[in-house]
Length: 452
Ligand code: GLU
Image (cartoon, rainbow, N blue to C red; front, side, top):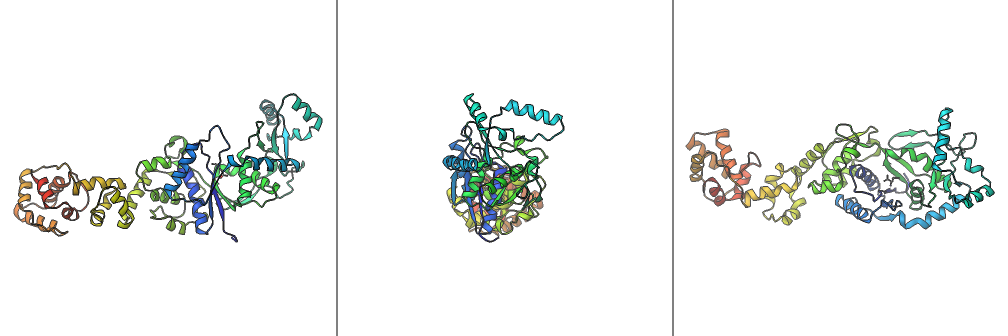
């Protein structure tokens, strides 16, 4: 690669970002980051009816939360004049032509073609209309839609080498332009189709690599032909496979709530989401990365699998817990303070191994510095334990000192010795090591929990 890459993430602001979108955004981001390139955010909002400013804002907020920073933002709705100018160029060059067929007419022709055993490709009938015939149609009140004339000669030969490309994920792709209908790029109401606006943008913004979902494979040959018609060199293309649910079902339908917003509200870490989405369906192990930097270091388009990828929320949650278990104190210092937790490092190191989510620290903070509901199963033993409590100052050795005393006096050992103490002191069956919690709780709190 000579110049540094320019990529774009191009969501339509018609809904919240979901896991599928994040995967596309992340791959683009990692790709350019590794090569010192540029990441653009392009809002594909030409569908005025469905695009909403609140979704545009939500997309920005979600990308920020994930840390997927962009250096430039463009909106297609701001560029209509530019699309109109390019449209005029294509019309002048004979590459965009007006068509007057109604949907019903087209449908009838398709049926006839199928009955005759020919592929239902648009027959270019509108190209044969004379200027007078077009005028007559216009006078009749018919407004044309506009088709792009693919680079296919009547013989079916493409003059520019056809529609194939070497996909950076899927490998060599062969598509015959002759098997495709000339695509509609401008609707009768004057609105532009994404197929067209996307190419105009990619040319104008100097996009070098288009990394997107496999659902766009079918657009690529056409879009490459539009690039060439605009006198531009098509970018490289990489199409990643789509996510499916853990049971193999389509993700979009059954897991509609798998939005970035939902993950955030569920208290998951952005790096857990990114680590999971960035390593499933690749030849790398699914591991928790604590920064985009380390995720980018190992990233390569060639590692991405071509098969559909299973997305499993349970796996994501497990990865989130793993990330918590290894997060160092400096990383969470501010968040702990913001949660009103001032005791710092010793507390964090004691509890992090028991967290599934960061928010779980609050419960453990209550255990060491606030109130919890002690479970007192054996009051006599607990009263004796209270009597045997060492004097302060307490250290990480206090627990051993105390329980050894108790062992000698009560004759208990193992679970019978330790479990009632844990239940009384934490109100929970399991948790961080008691030897770490004890000095954080302090003698007075411990004594109170053992017996009122
Ligand atoms: N707006 C399109 C989408 O969200 C962009 C596709 C592309 O990357 O070219 O699917």
